Length: 477
Ligand code: ATP
Ligand code: MG
Ligand code: MG
Ligand code: MG
Image 1 (cartoon, rainbow, N blue to C red):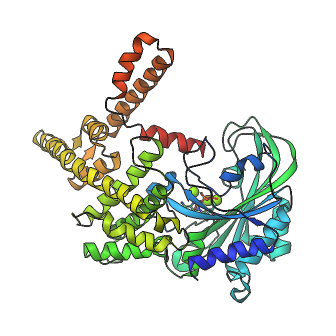
Image 2 (spheres, rainbow, N blue to C red):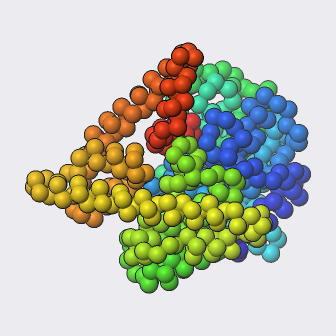
Image 3 (tube, protein in one colour):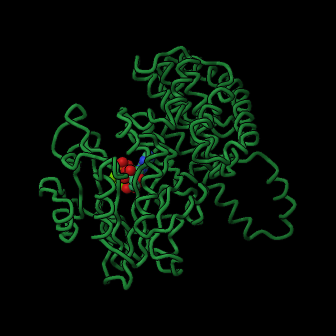
């Protein structure tokens, strides 16, 4: 089943059940505490927290998402993209647990001839919060699931809140058993690769206070109006229904792998390391396309830094596959071809999108040339003194002045059989962060006497603060 059809069935199912179809919000998060839209619920936060009355009792959407915290997983697990689409249904004080479970079960196991996804009910496992007997009972009643396929988990895995006092509640997740060839039996608490999480149902029913961490909070009482927030990973359902191994091999992504394989003359499936690189390329090129499409441009800070990192990692992965020529003019149009049916603006806006991407590749190629010379010198010096660890200072300089992401330096070092003094690198980064903070404080306290000096400084080189931003973002999550 094509991804487009999976999308259509999702929206049709919920529209037929009284939900208003709401278009995707942009990837730039409408909620100012987040860099990116990381889940389908983000545009609905004011309604879910009760700050604003919801315009509809029920809504459904296919939301574009970016999760930078999953970047290291890309290509290594079968299920993590930096860009993905989260399909959701939402109830604002309308139906609750029973409705959410019934709707999800119907769509997941409903026959394909009747508009469902047609998963074998015998392959479905669920988790519930350890104290949520109500949800467990409903799974027995509605889906007829046996007790052993309803697994209980603690707050760490099955409780949702915003990280602040306010609404929260237990969640229940739906998993599909991919079969014994993917890992040991025993359900998702034993193996999350064989048992693939496809859908998270969040039941917002309590008012929380004293929220100190994911697991440390106090329940004050029940919310006057209880909400449902769900998120289904569209790419995950796609790779199950397209009978491929992972989310990078679905119809919306695989053509980029195929083209990368052709360009590099490396057969996909022949070498694990190369396969991971091709998946990274396909994922990152798609994420970059979608980010630029939504107005992000490469820079040294915040969102722009994330984009820069994704583009540079794509170019770099292609280099590791042996391709020295420009790669984005080859790969970006392929990704556009996969995505434009769902996002027609990619086609009309492609001239702008592609020139942003290609200019970044050109800048990176120049940077790589100069940075690689610095790197080679440092490697020479390290070897000459019989050491095997590159100084943290070199990594810092490459990062700060030449825009080398640290993972690039680590990768290049490891190709030379060397490691990097990461402790020292982090210390220098921290030092720079402190300097930036002190600068910001001075700026705040600054008088007109310092204004001219400040103006001068601000035209100087911008320090890379991308890591600070990335860390802030993952803290918010
Ligand atoms: P996982 O445990 O696999 O990392 P998650 O528990 O972090 O997933 P949720 O926050 O519950 O994911 O998001 C809801 C749904 O969105 C998930 O059930 C999954 O189907 C999908 N999803 C989450 N992260 C990704 C990702 N990086 N790429 C693709 N789909 C994702
Ligand atoms: Mg996750
Ligand atoms: Mg999970
Ligand atoms: Mg989850």
